[in-house]
Image (cartoon, rainbow, N blue to C red; front, side, top):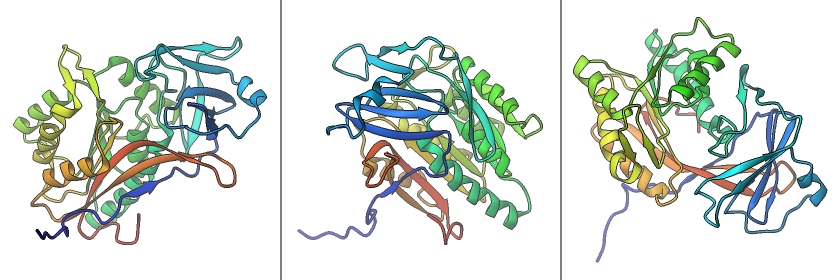
Length: 315
């Protein structure tokens, strides 16, 4: 049996966030990771950290917060143990933006620092689009949460539609916009179910030049709509494809579902963009301990499509 595999990705990309001063991975091991968010240290579960810790235990014990998983399956909830004196929230900065950090019930701190690799990549493509087309790209950010990707894209020159099913998340994004001084930025904030919104936008004839999506493994819309990644990813990508303009720029998908692979993410996005001139790449986003020979921990899979002629000298 012989076959040609020229349609498959030659190798996956590993992307590592850079340029942070208000975030760093200090250490990891024994199923946990030690991170700094602004001036505060936090310990969170990390199932991939199957190795010994590098830093002394006293550094770990000095953390202002620790998330304790409720069961052996660390993905099934838990609770924060927070030291007295830790504020409810504080500000974080990145690339001139200001936004809120705070311990959430979902174990994260209100944003995902590893996704900064996409924020900067999108900004480069947006700037090139503006230079070529002489207009801002229309960008749709789905499952947009607290809005840092939306703010970064708007600051780069895009007109952004920010959508999330959670009113609280959209409120956080609105507040982050104000913290960043982007009150006049062209961003419209919408609370809605992603699939329902896409279908209505298609009926309205609305088009977008770029789409960012970070779908959860499982979720519910504002009217009880049920989202399941394994079932709904393909129709979601089809609905996104239907909204792309005649001069599309990019589609970026970040996936935290562990049952998928980068190859599966690549194939799903490539199939969704079939017939449009461009290239799909895929791989893994990882954070790295901030020390010589620091170890890397994969955080999410990604696949992203870029129109032909853009980003030829970029990664």
